[in-house]
Every structure is written in structure tokens, then in C-alpha cells.
Image (cartoon, rainbow, N blue to C red; front, top):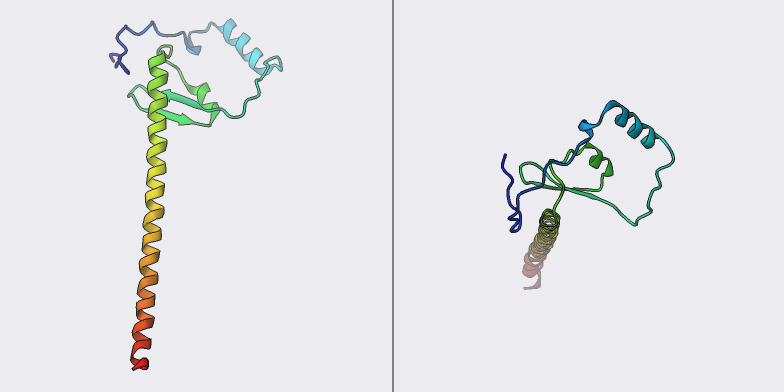
Amino acid sequence: MPDIPILGQTKPAPAAAPSIDDLTPEQQAALDALAASEEIEKTTVSTAFVVWVDTEGGVVATGDLAAAATLAPERPASADDIYGACASVQKSISAQETAGFTQRAMIAMSQAVARQQQEQQIMSQIAPKLR
């Protein structure tokens, strides 16, 4: 599958990054031992999330950091990849917020119409008695 340029990327994509599948049995054993040890120092952050571009060009963002362990990138991410993926996530969030605002406005409008109908029904019952 040919690479699809993202945001004006004109240079060819770099060679595929080595993946975990390329490890020798000794390297895999060393990696497993490192993962099982307490030697890995974790960095405390306020929040974290993972964003990736699938092979079809779809952008996925998730707070499930375990999802990163299941990824096998075909190549290293370029600045254009990161910029494009982040812009896509931002647009999706904005669209979700807009849909939420629209839904709340429609609910408020339907509640106002229902109140108006109730008031008209009450007025139609009271009006004959006032004559």
C-alpha cells in the first residue's frame, strides 16, 4: 500500500521501524525481564493518552495506555503525522461538543413547547369560566 501524504509531506517515508516481532529470542527474553523488573522508572504526569493513525488513514485517540502495547507501526511518525492526527482529534472533539450543544438546545426547545401547550390547555379550561 503506498504511503498517503499528510499535510504536504513530500519526502518518501523512512524505512519501516523495527518492531517487536524482529527481536531475537535473547532480546525478547531481556525485554521480558526488563518489563517484569521494578527498574523501569515511571514519570508522573497529569494525564496521558495515545493517538495513532491506522493503515486506512483513520485517527484513533484513547486514554487506554495498554492500547499502545498492541501497536506495530509501519514507520516512525513524522511531524506532519503528529500534526495531522492531533488536528483530526481536535476536530472530532469539537464536532462532538457541537452535537451535544445542539442536542441540549433541542431538548430545551421541546420542553418550552410542552410548557406552552400545557399553559394553553389550562387557559382554554379557565377562559369559559371567566365569561
